[in-house]
Image (tube, rainbow, N blue to C red; front, side, top):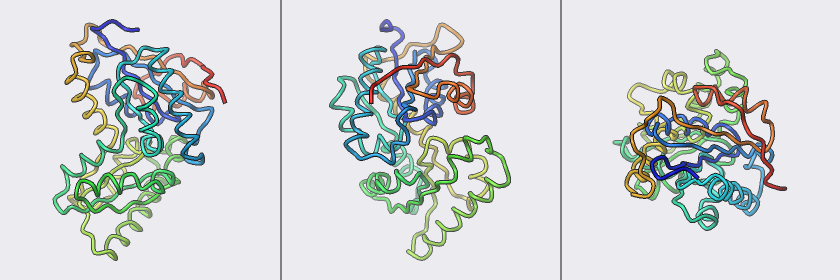
Length: 278
């Protein structure tokens, strides 16, 4: 466990897209130590039952807290945030933050019309977690699953014309639905941790004046507020040039090391293989 001057922040995802959240955290809290876990052996979570997702996520949370000494957890997985946040909070004794509530809060702050669009994976959209979180804040939200975007990002096609065309098709379909429903959206929420890598293409494709909310950035902002508002987790100014980061995966270590740097914006280093069971 890290000493009190450099608390460990645990970051969890079912894969490695959550490294975009870790990247945003490091830029804001470079004085912290980080432990990132990608449960790559058991992804995709979206095809599993809520009970199974809750068990997997709780096991991962306990590893970060009990084995790595994390004093604060960020659930950088939309599916786990949508379906297992309560189970994670019950499993550990440290503060836990998911990605959905910060994204909805940022949308509320950004939107003037009160109408927002959300693009995400099938599992996140089917959970209606963003819709519910936005509705609780007085927003009308229209969600759309964009299943082609994650594989395009993982293929490295983050500036490819094909990816740009796919984004435009999805957004055109979403805007057509919004017009049919009488909505006037002025804000778009990126409800998947892979999507920040596509933000330049997305911002180029949306209509003029549309605000794009990066849930990774929003989550990092919320985490900073909570961490530095708690004396036991407050992060002091850094003594070193770079934050200490340890990455763990339950499978596919080679793929994690190969692709992770795209998401983290720096080499992930040696990824440690762990076994959390079946």
